[in-house]
Length: 46
Image 1 (cartoon, rainbow, N blue to C red):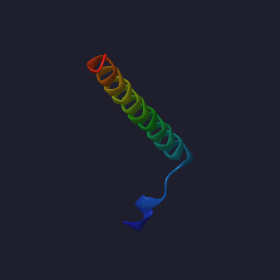
Image 2 (image 1 turned 135 degrees about the vertical axis):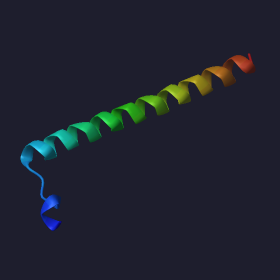
Image 3 (image 1 turned 180 degrees about the vertical axis):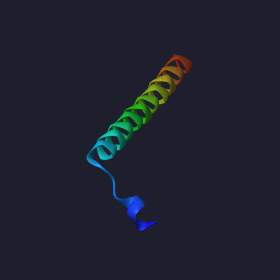
Image 4 (image 1 turned 60 degrees about the vertical axis):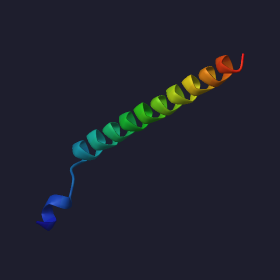
């Protein structure tokens, strides 16, 4: 069972790439919601 923990270089690279992609998607969503909130607040008081 312990042998399954060891990853090949290809697996490490693919996992790293997936993590980076997920990070970018999450960051994009945060920026999107932040922008929408600012627009709503700005137009609401305008």
